[in-house]
Length: 336
Image (tube, rainbow, N blue to C red; front, side):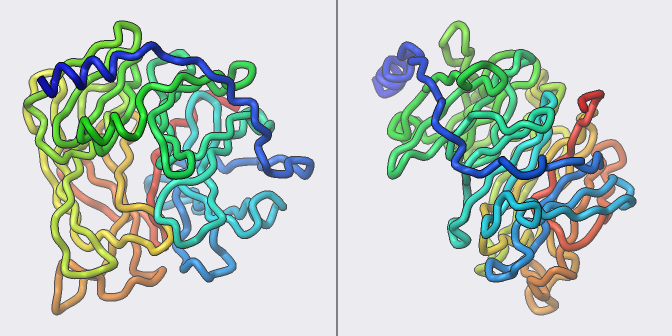
């Protein structure tokens, strides 16, 4: 009965709304360019009181070409924290938030060929592409309410479609939603796991996925990195078990434990990002653990934070660079 009610309540007609509110940020100054084209983009770690907050780091996977830029110094986001940088379909974007103690989310800001796109969503996490037709998915926040929204940033007015309210998501015990890269469908994970087909508006239950999984699909949609939080004795760290599942044969291929994954006091918990060829993951963690508590950091400063790559083919982990959190592996392609 609960499942029938759930499917009935979620099989609502998609309501198309406009998103034409002003971006709210002065863009009369110089464009945010050029953007260094490196393999990995990350948030430079600072305390929330640090004047350098909001800087973005760019580095190649071999550690070369490390570059730091500050959108705030270019006159855009002075006083803002920049979160979740990404580059998808020729769009460079990130979330910005001027409330340092808020642990997640921000105003979606996107640049396309030097121009700021008109979307004005306040999202709880980085938006993800859905399919190959310029469709994006995000969880948005409106005051105390929220929900899941689909939007097309490159169309006039940034048209959007509301999918589910916060109440419906909570009823379904969903903790994470992400888009498939190759088809227009969403993966919902949490107490249960479902695939939602956008065109047919129907669910497929994935009973084989573990409960409590925060899932990140690989770019080829063949693998799922399933993040499961483990208890930590430290306030500032969490321990993450990463399971890599094969989406076709429903088998777990590999698993990897990330100890002492520091949670900065100005942003959301740990995440991973796939390489463009779907054979490696990048993430951050403490370099040196606490000698008395190996699952905690020795210290939570800049020098003890490292960005690591886990190669799924060799099962090896290697340090890329220091001083960064929440790295995102970027596929620049041939876009300008």
